[in-house]
Image (cartoon, rainbow, N blue to C red):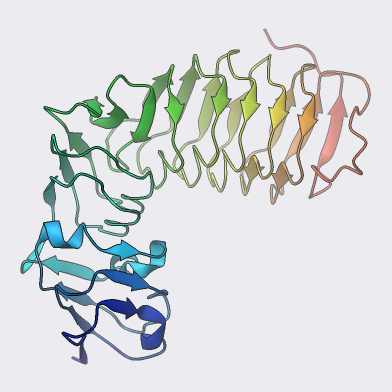
Length: 306
Protein backbone atom coordinates (compact mmCIF):
# COMPACT_ATOMS: atom_id res chain seq x y z
CA UNK A 1 0.00 0.00 0.00
CA UNK A 2 1.35 3.41 -1.01
CA UNK A 3 1.09 5.84 1.88
CA UNK A 4 1.31 9.61 1.82
CA UNK A 5 1.70 11.48 5.12
CA UNK A 6 1.01 15.20 5.11
CA UNK A 7 3.71 17.05 7.02
CA UNK A 8 3.04 18.43 10.49
CA UNK A 9 4.09 21.88 9.28
CA UNK A 10 1.30 21.97 6.66
CA UNK A 11 -1.79 23.98 7.55
CA UNK A 12 -3.22 24.32 4.02
CA UNK A 13 -3.37 21.07 2.06
CA UNK A 14 -3.56 21.48 -1.72
CA UNK A 15 -5.09 18.31 -3.15
CA UNK A 16 -4.09 19.32 -6.68
CA UNK A 17 -0.44 18.74 -5.72
CA UNK A 18 -1.32 15.06 -5.28
CA UNK A 19 -2.95 14.77 -8.70
CA UNK A 20 -2.00 11.71 -10.72
CA UNK A 21 -0.07 10.21 -7.82
CA UNK A 22 -0.82 6.63 -6.83
CA UNK A 23 -1.90 6.91 -3.19
CA UNK A 24 -3.81 4.23 -1.29
CA UNK A 25 -3.51 5.67 2.20
CA UNK A 26 -3.51 9.35 3.11
CA UNK A 27 -2.69 10.63 6.61
CA UNK A 28 -3.85 14.16 7.45
CA UNK A 29 -2.52 15.72 10.69
CA UNK A 30 -4.62 17.78 13.06
CA UNK A 31 -2.80 21.00 12.12
CA UNK A 32 -4.44 21.10 8.64
CA UNK A 33 -7.13 23.80 8.81
CA UNK A 34 -7.86 24.21 5.11
CA UNK A 35 -8.04 21.89 2.09
CA UNK A 36 -8.18 23.27 -1.43
CA UNK A 37 -8.08 21.76 -4.89
CA UNK A 38 -9.66 18.46 -5.87
CA UNK A 39 -8.95 14.85 -4.92
CA UNK A 40 -10.70 13.64 -8.08
CA UNK A 41 -7.39 13.03 -9.89
CA UNK A 42 -5.69 11.19 -7.04
CA UNK A 43 -5.42 7.58 -8.14
CA UNK A 44 -6.33 4.62 -5.95
CA UNK A 45 -7.20 6.44 -2.74
CA UNK A 46 -8.81 3.91 -0.38
CA UNK A 47 -8.25 5.15 3.17
CA UNK A 48 -7.87 8.54 4.79
CA UNK A 49 -6.74 8.84 8.42
CA UNK A 50 -7.35 12.13 10.16
CA UNK A 51 -5.34 12.54 13.36
CA UNK A 52 -7.69 15.02 15.06
CA UNK A 53 -11.16 14.39 16.45
CA UNK A 54 -14.61 15.17 15.06
CA UNK A 55 -14.57 18.73 16.42
CA UNK A 56 -11.23 19.38 14.71
CA UNK A 57 -12.57 17.98 11.42
CA UNK A 58 -15.56 20.35 11.62
CA UNK A 59 -13.13 23.28 11.74
CA UNK A 60 -11.53 22.51 8.36
CA UNK A 61 -12.36 24.84 5.45
CA UNK A 62 -12.98 22.89 2.24
CA UNK A 63 -12.69 24.89 -0.97
CA UNK A 64 -15.19 22.77 -2.90
CA UNK A 65 -17.06 19.50 -2.75
CA UNK A 66 -14.18 17.45 -4.19
CA UNK A 67 -11.72 19.02 -1.72
CA UNK A 68 -13.11 16.53 0.77
CA UNK A 69 -11.22 13.25 0.20
CA UNK A 70 -14.34 11.26 1.10
CA UNK A 71 -15.86 12.22 -2.28
CA UNK A 72 -13.42 9.77 -3.92
CA UNK A 73 -15.25 6.91 -2.12
CA UNK A 74 -12.30 6.53 0.22
CA UNK A 75 -13.02 5.45 3.80
CA UNK A 76 -12.30 8.32 6.19
CA UNK A 77 -11.17 7.42 9.71
CA UNK A 78 -11.49 10.07 12.41
CA UNK A 79 -10.01 9.19 15.80
CA UNK A 80 -9.35 5.77 14.29
CA UNK A 81 -13.01 5.06 13.50
CA UNK A 82 -15.27 5.03 10.47
CA UNK A 83 -18.20 7.28 11.26
CA UNK A 84 -21.71 5.83 11.19
CA UNK A 85 -23.30 8.13 13.76
CA UNK A 86 -22.05 11.56 14.72
CA UNK A 87 -23.09 14.31 17.09
CA UNK A 88 -22.32 17.83 15.94
CA UNK A 89 -21.55 20.35 18.66
CA UNK A 90 -19.98 23.26 16.82
CA UNK A 91 -21.52 26.69 16.46
CA UNK A 92 -21.23 26.81 12.70
CA UNK A 93 -20.80 23.80 10.43
CA UNK A 94 -18.75 24.56 7.32
CA UNK A 95 -19.42 23.80 3.67
CA UNK A 96 -18.70 20.26 2.44
CA UNK A 97 -17.65 19.02 5.90
CA UNK A 98 -19.15 15.57 5.44
CA UNK A 99 -19.43 15.43 1.65
CA UNK A 100 -19.01 11.88 0.46
CA UNK A 101 -19.16 10.23 3.90
CA UNK A 102 -20.93 7.11 2.63
CA UNK A 103 -20.56 5.38 6.01
CA UNK A 104 -22.68 8.01 7.76
CA UNK A 105 -26.15 6.81 8.81
CA UNK A 106 -27.31 9.12 11.61
CA UNK A 107 -26.56 12.74 12.47
CA UNK A 108 -27.39 14.29 15.84
CA UNK A 109 -27.65 18.08 15.80
CA UNK A 110 -26.45 19.47 19.13
CA UNK A 111 -27.95 22.52 20.79
CA UNK A 112 -24.80 24.58 20.11
CA UNK A 113 -25.29 24.41 16.32
CA UNK A 114 -26.59 27.64 14.80
CA UNK A 115 -25.67 27.31 11.12
CA UNK A 116 -25.58 24.41 8.65
CA UNK A 117 -24.80 25.06 4.96
CA UNK A 118 -26.94 23.08 2.54
CA UNK A 119 -23.77 21.44 1.14
CA UNK A 120 -22.56 19.97 4.44
CA UNK A 121 -24.01 16.51 3.77
CA UNK A 122 -23.61 16.17 0.00
CA UNK A 123 -23.35 12.57 -1.23
CA UNK A 124 -24.00 11.00 2.18
CA UNK A 125 -25.84 8.23 0.36
CA UNK A 126 -26.49 6.04 3.43
CA UNK A 127 -27.71 8.81 5.72
CA UNK A 128 -31.15 7.74 6.94
CA UNK A 129 -32.06 10.08 9.77
CA UNK A 130 -31.37 13.28 11.63
CA UNK A 131 -31.90 13.65 15.38
CA UNK A 132 -32.40 16.97 17.13
CA UNK A 133 -33.85 17.09 20.65
CA UNK A 134 -32.87 20.55 21.87
CA UNK A 135 -32.12 23.41 19.51
CA UNK A 136 -33.10 27.04 19.08
CA UNK A 137 -32.29 26.87 15.36
CA UNK A 138 -33.24 23.46 13.99
CA UNK A 139 -35.92 20.83 14.22
CA UNK A 140 -36.31 17.29 12.92
CA UNK A 141 -39.64 16.02 11.68
CA UNK A 142 -40.02 12.55 10.18
CA UNK A 143 -36.20 12.18 10.19
CA UNK A 144 -35.79 15.29 7.97
CA UNK A 145 -33.80 18.36 8.97
CA UNK A 146 -35.70 21.67 9.06
CA UNK A 147 -35.14 25.11 10.51
CA UNK A 148 -36.67 25.61 13.95
CA UNK A 149 -40.19 26.46 12.82
CA UNK A 150 -40.06 24.43 9.61
CA UNK A 151 -39.68 27.45 7.34
CA UNK A 152 -36.75 25.79 5.56
CA UNK A 153 -36.11 22.19 4.58
CA UNK A 154 -32.37 21.52 4.83
CA UNK A 155 -32.14 17.84 4.03
CA UNK A 156 -34.25 14.80 3.26
CA UNK A 157 -32.00 11.87 4.28
CA UNK A 158 -30.98 10.07 1.07
CA UNK A 159 -31.41 6.58 2.56
CA UNK A 160 -34.74 7.32 4.25
CA UNK A 161 -36.99 4.42 3.29
CA UNK A 162 -40.05 6.36 2.17
CA UNK A 163 -41.42 6.12 -1.35
CA UNK A 164 -43.60 9.23 -1.07
CA UNK A 165 -43.24 12.54 0.74
CA UNK A 166 -45.06 15.86 1.00
CA UNK A 167 -43.22 19.11 1.65
CA UNK A 168 -45.38 22.10 2.53
CA UNK A 169 -45.13 25.77 3.42
CA UNK A 170 -41.34 25.95 3.54
CA UNK A 171 -38.39 26.92 1.39
CA UNK A 172 -36.48 23.97 -0.05
CA UNK A 173 -32.74 24.56 0.18
CA UNK A 174 -30.35 23.56 -2.63
CA UNK A 175 -29.72 19.80 -2.91
CA UNK A 176 -32.23 19.01 -0.15
CA UNK A 177 -33.28 15.87 -2.04
CA UNK A 178 -29.96 15.00 -3.70
CA UNK A 179 -28.96 11.33 -3.87
CA UNK A 180 -32.28 9.94 -2.60
CA UNK A 181 -32.55 6.19 -3.08
CA UNK A 182 -36.12 5.18 -2.26
CA UNK A 183 -38.26 8.29 -2.81
CA UNK A 184 -40.48 7.96 -5.88
CA UNK A 185 -43.17 10.62 -5.51
CA UNK A 186 -42.92 14.15 -4.12
CA UNK A 187 -45.79 16.54 -3.42
CA UNK A 188 -45.06 20.28 -3.11
CA UNK A 189 -47.79 22.27 -1.35
CA UNK A 190 -48.11 25.87 -0.16
CA UNK A 191 -44.80 26.98 -1.70
CA UNK A 192 -44.60 29.91 -4.14
CA UNK A 193 -41.01 29.42 -5.32
CA UNK A 194 -39.18 26.14 -5.84
CA UNK A 195 -35.68 27.45 -5.21
CA UNK A 196 -32.42 26.90 -7.12
CA UNK A 197 -31.21 23.29 -7.17
CA UNK A 198 -34.02 22.30 -4.78
CA UNK A 199 -34.51 18.88 -6.38
CA UNK A 200 -31.15 18.64 -8.15
CA UNK A 201 -29.76 15.09 -8.37
CA UNK A 202 -32.94 13.63 -6.84
CA UNK A 203 -32.33 10.65 -9.06
CA UNK A 204 -34.92 8.22 -7.70
CA UNK A 205 -37.93 10.55 -7.94
CA UNK A 206 -40.32 9.61 -10.75
CA UNK A 207 -43.25 11.92 -10.07
CA UNK A 208 -43.60 15.50 -8.78
CA UNK A 209 -46.98 17.03 -8.03
CA UNK A 210 -47.00 20.75 -7.29
CA UNK A 211 -50.01 22.63 -5.98
CA UNK A 212 -51.27 25.78 -7.69
CA UNK A 213 -49.39 27.89 -5.11
CA UNK A 214 -46.19 27.56 -7.14
CA UNK A 215 -45.51 30.60 -9.37
CA UNK A 216 -41.76 30.23 -9.99
CA UNK A 217 -39.30 27.40 -10.62
CA UNK A 218 -35.75 28.49 -9.80
CA UNK A 219 -32.41 27.93 -11.54
CA UNK A 220 -31.74 24.23 -12.07
CA UNK A 221 -34.52 23.30 -9.64
CA UNK A 222 -35.09 19.95 -11.41
CA UNK A 223 -31.48 19.47 -12.49
CA UNK A 224 -30.39 15.95 -13.48
CA UNK A 225 -33.47 14.12 -12.22
CA UNK A 226 -32.63 11.05 -14.26
CA UNK A 227 -35.82 9.10 -13.55
CA UNK A 228 -38.40 11.88 -13.56
CA UNK A 229 -41.34 10.76 -15.71
CA UNK A 230 -44.31 12.82 -14.59
CA UNK A 231 -44.57 16.46 -13.46
CA UNK A 232 -47.85 18.08 -12.52
CA UNK A 233 -47.18 21.80 -13.12
CA UNK A 234 -48.98 24.49 -11.11
CA UNK A 235 -51.82 26.16 -13.03
CA UNK A 236 -50.45 29.50 -11.79
CA UNK A 237 -46.82 29.02 -12.81
CA UNK A 238 -45.28 32.20 -14.27
CA UNK A 239 -41.52 31.67 -14.46
CA UNK A 240 -39.07 28.87 -15.17
CA UNK A 241 -35.50 30.02 -14.59
CA UNK A 242 -32.27 29.00 -16.35
CA UNK A 243 -31.70 25.22 -16.51
CA UNK A 244 -34.99 24.73 -14.62
CA UNK A 245 -35.49 21.32 -16.22
CA UNK A 246 -32.08 20.08 -17.33
CA UNK A 247 -31.04 16.49 -17.76
CA UNK A 248 -34.48 14.98 -17.08
CA UNK A 249 -33.73 12.15 -19.47
CA UNK A 250 -37.00 10.23 -19.12
CA UNK A 251 -39.41 13.17 -19.07
CA UNK A 252 -41.61 12.96 -22.17
CA UNK A 253 -44.26 15.64 -21.64
CA UNK A 254 -44.56 18.90 -19.75
CA UNK A 255 -47.74 20.97 -19.75
CA UNK A 256 -47.37 24.74 -19.28
CA UNK A 257 -50.37 26.88 -18.32
CA UNK A 258 -51.45 30.16 -19.90
CA UNK A 259 -49.99 32.07 -16.93
CA UNK A 260 -46.41 31.42 -18.13
CA UNK A 261 -44.70 34.80 -18.64
CA UNK A 262 -40.99 33.97 -18.71
CA UNK A 263 -38.87 31.02 -19.77
CA UNK A 264 -35.19 31.77 -19.23
CA UNK A 265 -32.25 30.54 -21.27
CA UNK A 266 -31.95 26.75 -21.45
CA UNK A 267 -35.01 26.27 -19.24
CA UNK A 268 -35.26 22.93 -21.04
CA UNK A 269 -31.92 21.29 -21.91
CA UNK A 270 -30.72 17.72 -22.48
CA UNK A 271 -34.21 16.26 -22.33
CA UNK A 272 -34.15 14.03 -25.42
CA UNK A 273 -37.74 12.72 -25.16
CA UNK A 274 -39.49 15.93 -24.13
CA UNK A 275 -42.53 17.45 -25.80
CA UNK A 276 -43.53 20.89 -24.48
CA UNK A 277 -47.25 21.60 -24.37
CA UNK A 278 -48.61 25.17 -24.16
CA UNK A 279 -52.14 26.08 -23.15
CA UNK A 280 -52.39 28.93 -25.66
CA UNK A 281 -52.46 28.92 -29.43
CA UNK A 282 -49.19 30.62 -30.35
CA UNK A 283 -45.68 31.13 -29.05
CA UNK A 284 -45.46 34.22 -26.83
CA UNK A 285 -41.67 34.36 -26.47
CA UNK A 286 -39.48 36.24 -28.94
CA UNK A 287 -35.97 35.46 -27.68
CA UNK A 288 -35.12 33.10 -30.53
CA UNK A 289 -36.29 30.19 -28.41
CA UNK A 290 -33.07 30.18 -26.38
CA UNK A 291 -35.14 28.57 -23.62
CA UNK A 292 -35.75 25.53 -25.84
CA UNK A 293 -32.13 24.43 -26.12
CA UNK A 294 -32.84 21.03 -27.67
CA UNK A 295 -35.51 22.27 -30.10
CA UNK A 296 -37.99 19.99 -28.39
CA UNK A 297 -41.32 19.56 -30.10
CA UNK A 298 -43.81 22.30 -29.15
CA UNK A 299 -47.52 21.55 -29.01
CA UNK A 300 -50.14 24.29 -28.62
CA UNK A 301 -53.61 24.43 -27.13
CA UNK A 302 -53.69 21.25 -25.07
CA UNK A 303 -56.85 20.34 -23.22
CA UNK A 304 -56.95 21.93 -19.78
CA UNK A 305 -56.24 19.48 -17.01
CA UNK A 306 -58.98 18.65 -14.57
